[in-house]
Length: 350
Ligand code: NAD
Ligand code: GDC
Image (cartoon, rainbow, N blue to C red; front, side, top):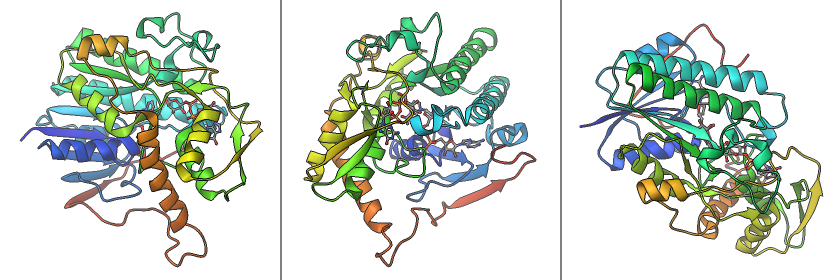
């Protein structure tokens, strides 16, 4: 049985990926600071540990692992990464994890490391026009990301590529474009626009209004989680190193996203535009390279994924309203067959 190590297995994409790998017949070890928030992990074994600590990485990266999926990062939506408040933590925490993983994986001659970079590494100057953003892979340089989160992603892409060139580490690098779906963070400050919009619409009354940061004319594209995992698995099973975009090229304004969500909910909603962290003015996944190299493209429109996500978030909102007796946060209490905890000298954040 092929063994996979999923770092960040307690997070949104990581917990879905573990499930996917199990369905494909893998034995999976998951590692994260925490268990998944919303349902039990599907991992065969789950280590609660801090990947900034080299000893934890040494312990979980074992020679029998065929594939590492490196998703662990200090990240969030615009409200987390564009305020500037978390810049030092984001850069230090994520870079430390990647430095540990790259060197230990190379030394232990792990067969393949997948690294999840982000569209946030693309230069701001190519994303000023909301109707014509340029996010082709070859537009990355000269570099000019608009956030420290994006700079760290760019650094870590280069780090993994350097280990590939100098130490023969077999890497695959994807630049994810705003991935969403059920069991993603939907409240608390780290949620991204699709989840935030679903939550606000679910909380609003019919005929009410919701707040939208900025004028809502900024553009984005959003990729449903299952489509993202199809892209990841296709990249890993190919001989193509990347970096390559994994995203949707169905570009919408945030106003359109909000109105689509209201339509799904069957509510009449007006939009109240307020100040907030904005990020780039326009962004869309350029899928020409991934189509040419891997024959991959998203198969379903935004609306299909948004419907599933809205239903899930509306149920979360319902469960968490004070009048409901089962008003518990979504924290998972179930444990995998084997769970262990690795403590170290660093606190989770500093
Ligand atoms: P997430 O926040 O849900 O998952 C990241 C996980 O990493 C969290 O569970 C967190 O606890 C864990 N983590 C953070 N620091 C850690 C540490 N020191 N030790 C162990 N675990 C630690 O985010 P996600 O949406 O699942 O994203 C997964 C990856 O994909 C991240 O690297 C993210 O930057 C990248 N990405 C995501 C998106 C998106 O839209 N979701 C877009 C671009 C890139
Ligand atoms: O958070 P996000 O989805 O991140 O925001 C998209 C746009 O939606 C921003 O312009 C933001 O101002 C606007 N927006 C309006 N209202 C709200 O209530 C809201 N909440 C949020 N969150 N946004 C709102 C993301 C990063 C990810 C990741 C991806 C890669 O940037 O946050 O960490 O790396 O990019 O594509 P976004 O798309 O700017």
